[in-house]
Image (tube, rainbow, N blue to C red):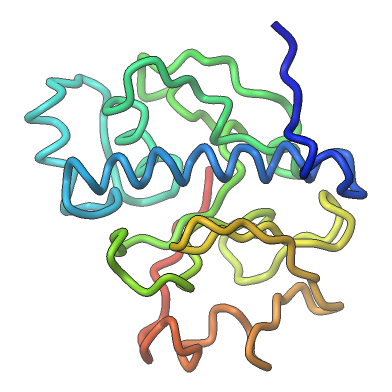
Length: 196
């Protein structure tokens, strides 16, 4: 069966942007389901509960978005690796859907979304939760993949394309999105987890 994007996404200008938005919305659903079961989104504190309930032998870590997203893989029956992917400079090829070992589960390049850890569904609606294409290890976005736009999912399940400025930043409320002075961060720097 061929995948067809909803009409609302088909009019977007860059060919890879609609699929990135579709995938980020799929991840949003997985995060909300996880929160319903575990009381928050995946982070270091949920690892033990996920291991106890699922009996997974897959190593679960908290050092990267890819490691934290493994909790979604093992708690969501029938899920595959594709929703974690978008065509970016660091993830140019689609995942292989093999995630039975540490070396294969969301392996390098199979995940394109940075993740802000430490939140839950009941937190502020405008908190950014998932972002792409964030350059690993930085707070700068790569303008190449989506025609100068960053795709950002907020906690209210809205996914929007924001312009990336000439310095690689997304500006919201007149400040860089990662600035702790942003109202949604409440003065605390966000815990950014980059994909591998």
